[in-house]
Length: 290
Image (tube, rainbow, N blue to C red; front, side):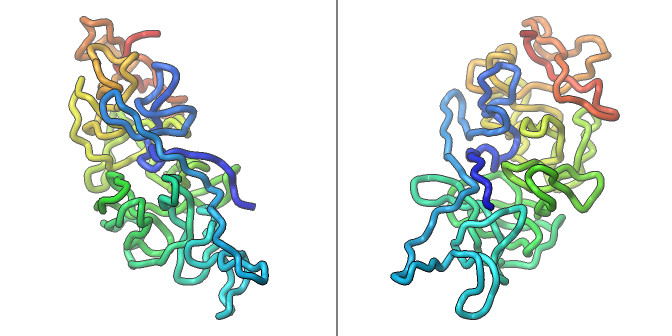
């Protein structure tokens, strides 16, 4: 059974955004997200339920589960699939791709490379959906609908939507919306080791993971989802002092320490963020108290 969970493009960018509450990352709503530039927000709806190709006169479908004319088992190229189950035919893998109407949905696409999780990789853009990672992962970087990007191969989660798993004990699965495994981290210490990575809050699972998202925005600058420098986070403007766009970069802080927020004079305080966990109880962000 394929999931019918609806997600939006910002889940592909991965850091949760566009929340109805000011105490949410810029671009998220309960884990679903959207891409935004300044105050303008655009959303591409995605669904794990793939579109169905036109059926032959005999009632069968080239994307139906089962053996094709060559005897291969699984979904054929372009068929709907599960990123957890990776239920595509040999030589294909289940990847998010932009379909007709702008929806982002999982589809069985060709495996075009041999880069393994952890390797530098390239992606052809969400419209195409293909990359040069092997069957076990997807190339993660600064997302674009049509332009290619460079990034790092991240492994697909195992298990199920209800109980996702990662091979590395220290990795965290980003959940049912976009099931990839990322290294967990502490935003106060940073310490991410991948090319261009920083430690960021991921709202869908309410914790912190290592991501490479462009990492250029500075404190107080406008941001579109996750493109803030390491040590900063893109957050809704209503909760960020001196922010006059849809979202702005603000700094992480230690809730047990004196207020060192850059915009403390404008009311910013160190506000707890995330549910914590061992070693993460003191993590906060410089925000306006609500």
